Image (cartoon, rainbow, N blue to C red; front, side, top):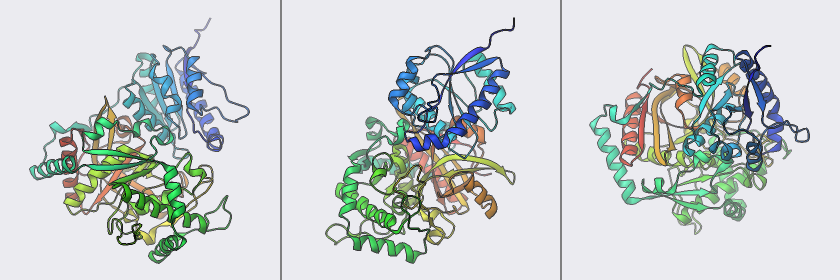
Length: 534
């Protein structure tokens, strides 16, 4: 008799929103079929730990409660794959994974369509923060040699080893004395002066990895002001129509293109944008009330049912050149001529990173505008591996080709946002960048930081990449110096990456070293990744 195939359990974490799960399910089903074929070739069989629901019309774990119930039926010592072809809420499966004793493998399909890579990276960062051991893997079609070799390793040993040679500990890096001195000085100033991070409801979309433990944040001199999105909603409704129209007119005069229609359910309407203008003024005034140095709006569950999405708001806040807003008494222009740092999806790790970036870049007279992006996808082009960094909100027009004139507003996809709202889309300009990520491991803060550039792709290639991802959102075509696709994926501990420009390569190197030195002086463990040039 032929040998019976060995069994690997499989779970699939999904979105909380039924519309997203139903729309994305065909891609997940196709991915699982290809993954099953790869395992069959190795003498293994997939056993799905939860069935496809005929009523919901998808096979995702769509709540934390469901995840807990599913894991009760899984042998805690069995090998387990978490397969992701979509954006997913990590907390749906985190509870079960924290007590699973068998080998865990997170797997994503290499596709920009529904961001499975983004979902997997978020889960990876959450598992790292939770202290759960896991391996991770990705593939375009699950038949390439890289995937097959690494899969065999996991099936045989229960773990996968990846090449992480690109990451060097800070202590092993030769640091220019000027940058080291500046970083140490800025760290001392932040600790002495302290800063406030405004949090409009913590824990967006199950992003456990995006929440910094208070004790770790306090050690940096930064403290949370826990705000409520219900307060933001109320304050938005208090902003006058005249104030909203002034902001709207400012955008028009700056040359931003808004793609407007009249159907609220499917198109971007003028009223949606006006409400976003009110939210923008409200966020500034609340931040002023509490003396915040930065703010993060969750903008998903709850707020999306009341207001248009906050993407346009976030990008305006992160730009130095933005519509002026007066204080409540009309006597002061709030944060005149400078950004109010906003971190999308209340990703506190990005918020802290942005604070460090602003202080370093201001001291070195470099552009202070910075943003996070999703690590969405990528392909080789012209001899370089060119990433598609893409995010719905927070990208400042200062990063775009043409600035405000290169900015466009499209309706947020109805699948995610029933009340629409304008995105702030643009094509990021060519230039030298510093990329980084702060993350939590062993209850302490860590930072990976490296250099790269944004490249100018032919218009048709940029458009192709947009159409393969989310064409309403801003895009950055990035090359990471000395860090390959697989090295980046193996090491990166989040769905997000922070990016900032510098005027030239020399200045970017100075910013990298000063920022890394500042982080290290604040007690953050630092890895310098890759090289300083291509």
